[in-house]
Image (cartoon, rainbow, N blue to C red):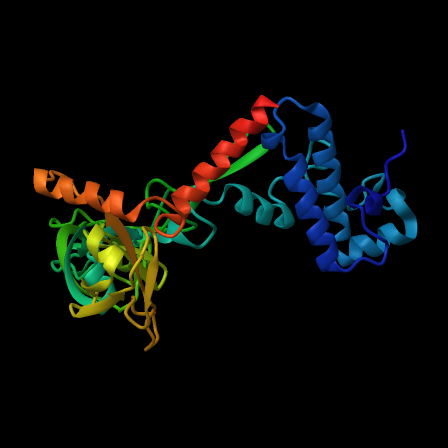
Length: 380
């Protein structure tokens, strides 16, 4: 059976650039990788064809030979695609990038990255009050972490002993193991990917170059932060192995519920109960503000539950800005309870004298008028 054209296998034109070839190869390799299609022999076959095609076309000399002679250029012992099993070579340079993208984190970090001993990033959850979020603050936190060992200055070696090349991985920091036609690359367990080991490890840190310790840090919380804000302190995470760079510390802020205010971005809301008489006759109320001051609100006669009053510039601080949001005061008319006989009599007298009608209770009158119409419609 004739082989499919390599350009058709990758789905590109014969004039495709090197970047276009690589992009097409990566997309197809991710799609047909056997680990993503377990038990699918067609996907495995397709995967091998994709790798074989890219192995030829990525090489300028091989591509030139293929463009001139086709598949015949690599027959009869000619320099064709490397590897066994149908030309598949897991260690080809192009596929190594794909392997790192798909399994880099699972296998302990990408090549040359975190596997070389960089300290881990840390997370610290910090709860603050709404007032602290408004004004900002200087917080002191204590973080259990790993710090550089003072006894060996972070080298891991006793009395200045220098590390030597790891005999397991020969300094590569990685070891390879074959599984069928796959070659799996893992971080070396002897040196943890550093490529070097300590012959005379420090007695304090055991050769790690770091020890566990609680660290005290000062954190600046700027005005206007919101719930979920993340603050990064570079280099304040775990110390790296044997002098490797430290990780970062990420502080996640949460804002405690407030007894008066609810926040919506830069605006704050406050629900204020007022007496029925104040709502009916009008008056003034004093409400607290987030900055600690008092705000005076004029309530008009006939105010209803849910009515809002806007106080400009009385809301939250805006992050990295001098401006402030607004404050909204929402009133709730409170029905009087525990009335005395005298008070009950006065209310009955009010109801009798005032009568019923749209003039005094327009909403209730309007509602029950619609209810009456609804019932009448049902009778028809």
